Image 1 (cartoon, each protein chain N blue to C red):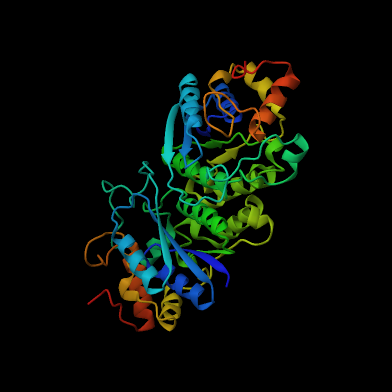
Image 2: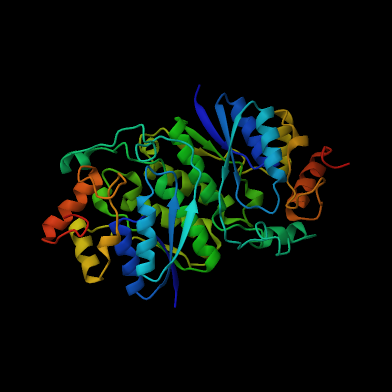
Length: 221
Length: 221
């Protein structure tokens, strides 16, 4: 049984990715990061999701003391009530410098240390226009980096997988439903609290996906 | 005055790189990592080197709890008394999975957050046969990743520099001497302690460099 390391954030996309990798037959080790985000609600979600998938969860504490993002700095305003067109236009203030590169590098190191052959990430193209490190060109470049810069990669036994990259949110939710992903445990909202704000970019994209699919989001009453 | 982030380890190569970047006129921010290495002697060296260069030093604590390397795990034996030929032949047990990828990703994030235009690393080809993440192909791939995966990189304002890559240890020491690098503050030995062991790969390569140049290493009496 091949091992895989799956990046999970507590959000919906990475939860679907974990259940996808489990379904594919990998022994999945989950990894998530406590990196100074605005709220730690998503860490609770990551714990619940990993537990639901019977996947061991490693939480990495990263003391990033710089604050160049509204996702890290509570003094900065989150963008709210934007249209889908606006969301897709710019790199938003929620961009965290080199975040996926940091997460992927640590996941790659962990994978190599435990003898895993794959690292899974749930990035997808709907985020692409906003976040440069969610684009397929970037992910392919990281896969190339693994194959050049690690021992297992050089041996042809470590690679990056991004199975959601070309899917819309609607398609991801449909896939998740078929895999019985416990959506009620996931958390997408950029704010913390007990209930999603329904106004941040992440809530807006999630709501659009459920609406288009004609499904009810268990987090929203 | 452009800003640069310089990875320093406390070792000789990265000290030369810092003084090289300072000489080039960059305002240099140093960054180093407390990542669970066998000893923290090199952190003391990193502090002294940064201070000598009037460079602010950021120490990042990384809780990597995996131990797949003799540089992290004191229960594993360090390779000792190897010939230069042996050193150049294999990936040694001191290889730390994806170490440079982790260090570079965090340095890149820091650079973007503080508005720096360059990240400097002191990797060089004499380490290449041993460490896959010290090779020029790898470093070029990481530079490409910065340009795809970060906002400043996409804007053409963030890049990786590796000025020592094609130099031998002898040439690096010669350059360092011309830049008045305080070699007495540097630490290369894989073991901690008060004095270099003179038996590990790192001590052997350093001694060879000083010897070939006809210079005395201030750490060795």
